[in-house]
Length: 411
Ligand code: MLT
Image (cartoon, rainbow, N blue to C red; front, top):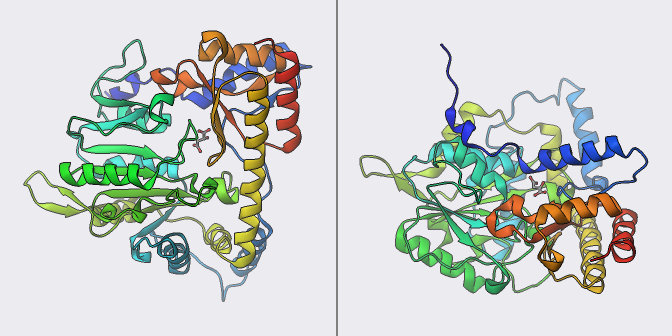
């Protein structure tokens, strides 16, 4: 008889965002006249940059001509894209990353989950609390955890609480952990990490032979020139970190799909026999077996991000969403709410008023002003009492949502 991966039965009922969508759809069905504004999931709304569109159109034409047609591409991604990424995203910032260490993929969400395949099941794994739920759920699916408790915490994971008291940056653990997930600018809190903070993590990882999974999907939103964009700006990081990046949030590729993962060739972990094994080789083996690469057309679109026009157009996009974040911050502050993030990140992290729970605030916002956000408790037990508002939307929707909250919601 066929059996299932029982680890899936340990998962909480639904992934956070589909669960929110389910509740919103139920409300919409019961209230067909409600004009609902969705500031929940961090999905972009503005069109693709012209430079990317033109490059993709050109690539489509090439695919229509047998002399320029492309079949399977290299599993790791086309060299012309990886070289531009290495030069402009890393080397230009003093980060010593070579094109051969970059793997193009169809998403950071997939890569942060799939990366677990090349690691053993006996690692001690640390996540912040609150945290992007993908890191936790993929560990549950992989069988790296025990059961979930009433607070939504899985046995076997080390939770590092982040809160206003520690500027939403986790304390370095006193115990030894093997794998650590860090996300900066942070989803969900919008916090950023200083060089000193990341250096402390790199030093910890070196001392403990740990590996940091560094999710930099929102790096384009960093406005403070002193904040590092890549963990490889930190000395020693090549020996301890894997970095994940995305074209979703800077160039609007959430529907187009393109991302990258960096695995320095200097990064190793132990085999069962004690040998040091290059993780780059394992990931290359995994990708060349299970992945056929991102389409030529999409990689051409991603390459255009690195042209002069592309750079200026993505900056315009990022500035647009950052202006939304500023409006959200200002309006919610005026309404008397305590807000965090939203300066170097597209997310504003809000303390719920009068100690009400995250889901109570979700219901109140949905039912009284028809605005959707994300309950902080959906990101972990320590997110209870917080609420995330995404700046990814049209200016009109953001202004209307804030106007409804400030004038029609009694807090
Ligand atoms: C979010 O809302 O947290 C985003 O959708 C994360 C993602 O890009 O998967």
